[in-house]
Length: 133
Image 1 (tube, rainbow, N blue to C red):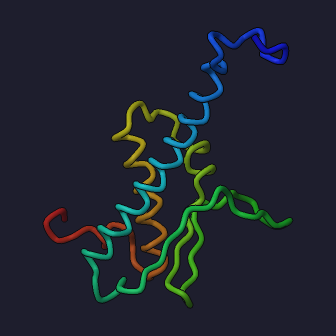
Image 2 (image 1 turned 90 degrees about the horizontal axis):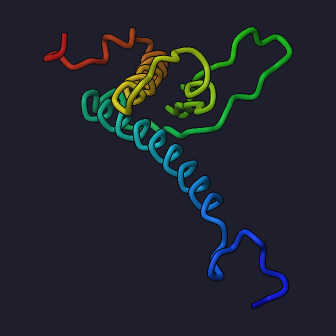
């Protein structure tokens, strides 16, 4: 046995908790990014002429200036046809009754629709294809 081995290691293996915590964090980030990506792809397919050059990315949080009264959930760059969705404000602020993955997905999609609506100068409900109106 090594003299440097932690008293928490069992049979030469590291403690279980640290690996599980990092895997859970990776899965949560992956879920958020997947929902944003799938929602953007859905919108591009629904509005091919208007959104052919749509670019999107996920960032942790927006930079806040001294005059900011609210934490933004997204940012729109019309000159580059890009939206940025801010993960931490969406996950942690606002709607607290998300009990399952479906409700979490709908919550994230709401902000993607709002960002794309702002980019195009449309109400987010206008982005829903005809069959859903």
